[in-house]
Length: 114
Image (cartoon, rainbow, N blue to C red; front, top):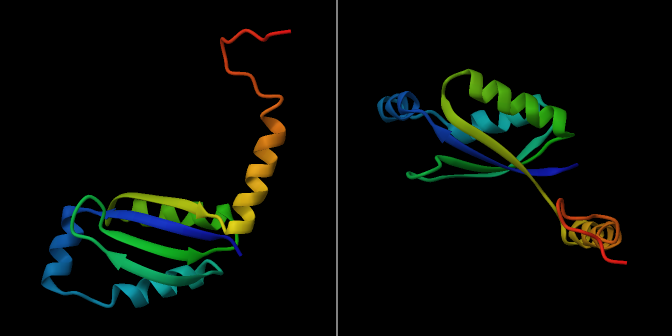
């Protein structure tokens, strides 16, 4: 199952609500990930540029897009980004494919040499 890094920035209203009454955000994130057919590996918070970092397993990009849309539409987050994470083997495979297609790709505007 693909693994993703979720990065979210809470809205000012969310920070205010959490300061008044902090519920178990980790349990909430776990239930949310499971509702999409996945699981929560870990979650960490930061008081700074971003508010929350989570590593989740989700079935596919459609589920991840649904998660981002759901989280954003609530107004609780200013932004939500998901990034698919690669294992060492997946990175090796990607680099092998890149090596092959780099023979075909041409930078726009550059002339080709004979």
